[in-house]
Image (cartoon, rainbow over all chains, first blue to last red; front, side, top):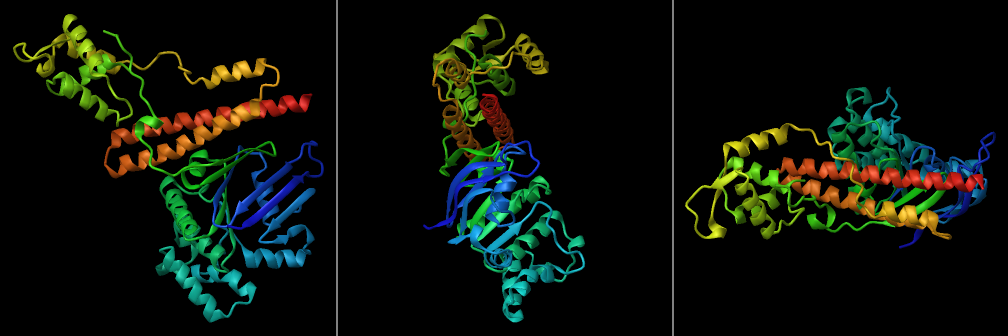
Length: 247
Length: 175
């Protein structure tokens, strides 16, 4: 496996902030094909980290490399092209355009990228089929459930075949059932080889779906855990304590 | 959890001998505890002594003697079922003791201690998710609830570890 994302001593301080860095000398490598969760309480620096990896923000110190590109060396225009071509984004609030159909929403990044319309449409329909929402292609987002809207957002994120899918609290606006379906889908995409970086404050979600959980506290990485997915024996996980001699 | 009332609850359904009590108790808890047959015998004898259970058949082989609930036993069971659980919070994990001692020992590496503990809790959450899913597939709604309880406790444990880590960071900032 190759290192797809490489952060070296990355810091970020915002102007006017209390002086404490939002990110403090974070070094982290993410291999291609991994599903990594970035976890931590609110204010721990998760979104800052995501924004730096996405090239939406620039670090105050250190280096961010994604897919071999040193993002700090790219101009704003090249950075925008890089984001469009190499990254896919899924947000908490789907960010779909209400006046466009599902298919039109999915096609936007491909049109910006200059992909031939026939190729883009074929790829979009393939994704909608894969995500089980092909029959909704002509519908408008307002008519869809939250879970369906998030599937559309995932299709849109994947239309340009990104090397990295960034998912920021993707189940935050969904009910338990819709959230579980979306996460199953993201995990399935990962099994097919898609590298995913999942940002969440939800430990249950992170541990259930990610093979690796990086925990941030106050801008620092305090743990980087690789989890085993094997089927456990109940007794090794939970024990009900029984009192003796209570008669 | 009380073996005494667990046995009374099982006998409320039907008379059972000691081995059936053990098997049903273990199934009730989804294999999360192996009950010692000796414990079951001892508890049944005490329950019989106190008039809460009685032999359902003439006394023969001890292992094959079925017991049933008496009226006194049924009332005791009903009273227990109606009571809320009010025992003090039990913090049994040694991490609490380790944390207390590590803060007192010079050079005690608290962040590393907490990081190791966090990994255990994260792995436990993943394992519990697998068990919960398995119980769902098997239609064991009772076990799903048991695992949900364990998941919520583990999430709380993780939050506590994070709170400790944040306190340590605050302490570093002050120095």
